[in-house]
Image (cartoon, rainbow, N blue to C red; front, side, top):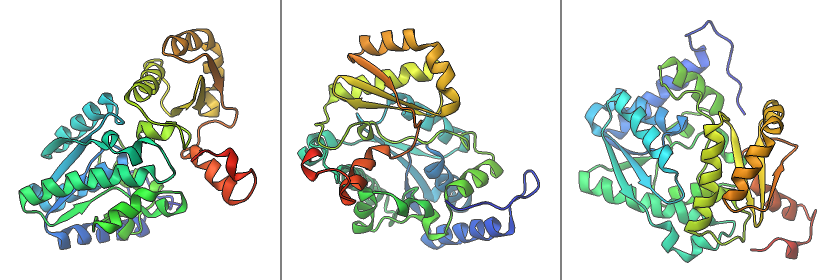
Length: 293
């Protein structure tokens, strides 16, 4: 992950100022853009700078999916209203695609293919050439087949092109006054399942219900990982004492939602942890046949 130089409060380092200038230049060159918008800080920053640069030639599109909690949609719409950006909410149907449902390691490719196809339809309707997403300079280090779907369809990643990484995104978002600059990282609900577990609307709703409950309890950065009858909670280590203090009510609620066993991951939250099985297989740490694909 890239480091961000220490500067006085409210100021950008010369390096980040230069990257910010380059980001504006990239968007100016595009002339008009449809931004794939999720409400996360990455796509919000792209949308903000695009709108500041291009004005009404910027359009945000949210893919309304069963793998995207309704609460996230509402939060994204709220932030877009704060920025004064036009938003189109368009349904996506990745669950109709068996190659997505079977949840092989290329699942994200099929999800993004559906999303980018929807964005392309909107762009064509509006006569806009370019589509942009929130991928950034730090995304190259993990298993991200969705990026291949974007590359195949000519989707631009302005943050990546400008060399801006995650910590710089948060710094710049805070500098620009975005209300969600410190929003915890989020991935679609399909990332909660081990590869090979068939994804269904019922399982997505089960995980969504568990995560909604944890948010209601005040937890911010966490994941509910689904392992058949076992629910594995990933929270930040500093939240361990609070989870243990609330263990009886958390366990009771998650059992109501369908789990027999509720466990706490002692490593704590780490984004992309479900990809560990892929890395282990690549390193021959466990037999290939033990990972169902």
